[in-house]
Image (cartoon, rainbow, N blue to C red; front, side, top):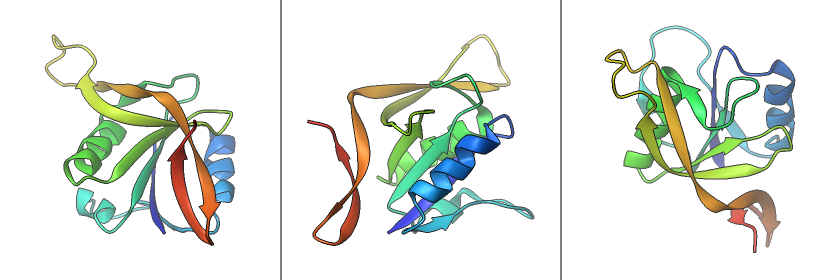
Length: 129
């Protein structure tokens, strides 16, 4: 399973490391440096976004645009919290419509949390029951 790790420069380094460990059995794709294109996300089954430290649904423009791209491509998009709960993003909106620069986005989540699970030897993200 390929997972794209979307992270803010304001994300907790500790949480980023926890996410890498949680998904260590997966192929983790992440942007590191050089020219950027959202198409880096396209071969992935899931996008896992690490929000700015102390936030959950208020995210920056970069992570917001990556989530929007994933949603357009029917790639599962989740924001992970400090307890490693996965919040399924159902919609991404500009946080302040009067801010023409659209610096921040607000993620709207599904009501139920999701978790990484192994079923029949395959890793999947599944909604809690």
